[in-house]
Structure formats: C-alpha cells, structure tokens
Length: 359
Image (cartoon, rainbow, N blue to C red; front, side, top):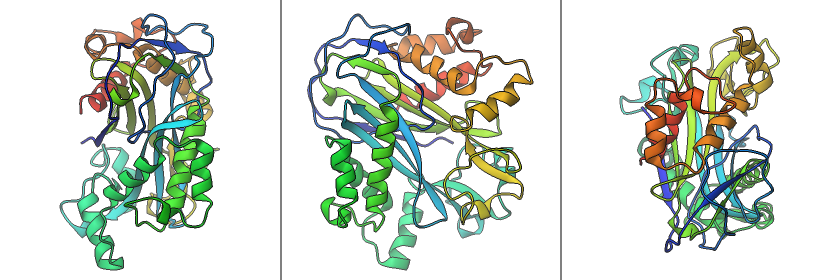
C-alpha cells in the first residue's frame, strides 16, 4: 500500500529549465498545497548533476517537519515548497495508531503486515489520517459533531498557507484565532498545523535549491508513502513535477529503533503515541537520526551517511525527466550512476519518487 496525494498549482506553463544549488540537508522534510503563480528566475540548462554551484536566486526548495500537537496520541507530518521566504505549496497529514478491532476498512502504513508492524503494540496499527479520512472523519462527527472531513480540513489549511511568507503564516498561527482566519477549516489545532508548515518551510530553506524558469502554476506536488527498503521501515517520498520532469524530490524513512540507544523518536513518542509501540522500541526518522543509523550502516562497511545517500539520490533526480528516471531505476545497478550514493536499494528509492510523481 502507498498513500499518494497530488496537488496542482493553477496557472499557465512557460518554458522551463532546472539547475541545482548547493545547500545543507535538513533532518526534516516538507510537502505542498495550492499556491499563487509567480515567475521564478531563469536558469541555465537543465541538469541532474550536482556540483559546487552558486546560490540560485528565487530558487525552489523543499523540506519536511514532524510536529507534536496537544493531542498526544499522534504526530503531524508536513511538507513545504518555498521560493525564498514564500511558501509555494504545502502538505499535511497525521500519523496515529488505530485499534485493529475498530473495522476492516482501516489501512495501515506500508509494511504494517510485515516486520515493521511487528513493533506495534498488540491490537494497534499505525495509520495515515489522510489514507483513512472517511473512517477518521466519521469518528470526528460522532464524538465532536464535526461536519468537515479531516482531509478537507488539511486541504483548507494548505491552501491558506500557499502564497504566504513564513512570517505571515507564523503570525496567523500565533494570533489566537487561526481557525477563524482559514476558510473551510474547523480544527481546533489549526494553529499547530500552520506552525508545522512554517517549520517545514524553514527546514526547506536549508536544503538544495533549483531554479525554475516557468509558471509555478503548472507544477504539482506529489506525496507518497511506500516501501523502498525492505520490510522494516516505510518511505515518505515527495516529488514536485511539471508533468514531464522532476523539479524537486525528497526522501525519508521511518523505522522502529531501540529506545535504549541515543535515538530521537517522532514527536509524542514519550506520551500517548509511544504507548502504542512495542516495549523497548521508538519510531524514528532516519534523517533525524542520521548519525546513529549511519553508525550501524558503517558496521556493514558503509562509508556514506544515510542522509547523504538520500540527498545524492534526490540531487540526481532533480532535473531529470520522468522517463529518464524510470530508465535509471530499471538499470541493473542504478547506484553506480549516482555520485555519492551507495545504497543497495537505490532503485527502490527512485521508484518511490516515481510512484509519488505518477499520481
């Protein structure tokens, strides 16, 4: 199973080209929502190769965040695309454990029926609220009288964020009446979700930039959940595309790690959310825990950190046509074509981005 969400940005397409820009990798990542059209700075020829590059004026950047809400049973995942200080698009979802006895229609995250799911507390399954919007919205309606579905609420908040600066979004979140400011939103945690997008946007500013010479309205942000690397984790993949080319991409894995080690769990791991995890385990982002996870990889002979591997794959994909990326994934050893990548499952991560982009 994979969760895919695609959001198009309205507008007319102009000629486009992409160029990569150097930047540090964030330990979190972001997604997108509808945004206002604007013209980006022109770039040099399209390129999927990343080298020492000058900063890209008005370049596009992507990042994510994992955030706690005041309801301690779940955590929020946000993705944001920015151009400078302006949020071009955003995406929201919550991950929460549901009772498996609640109904056969509940869909767990990828690998819930494999090794990853073995670390759930008995009778629990980790889910995406978007993937289970109908079920969760029925609970909202029954318990609190809600008349707006959870995914519709997320979409309204994303739409509000698009076109706002990070400071503007934060100001609304801190105003005390965020839910009143966002048309179509009814969630009491609206301010938290706005801050989650703002955090993802700030993280995006630390990541690689690409220049896009075209109408942002023709870009679509896709977010997907899949199984790129075996059965012990699941992958979060984001792809910003113009229909033919990958403009930006982003990767992370969530995996259960030992709580006895120096590991940073996802938000609310020490509260209600963590109570639904097997004893001695904590759900963690590989990016956030890159040093720890990479040290274990080194025991198997790896010399490249997991976050650097993700970055190398992204940097190579950024600027590639979808057709060329598909051809790369189909090669016998695609990792050999990507400078800085060493992961045996490189093809799996390429396909995770492609699967997201296909929807």
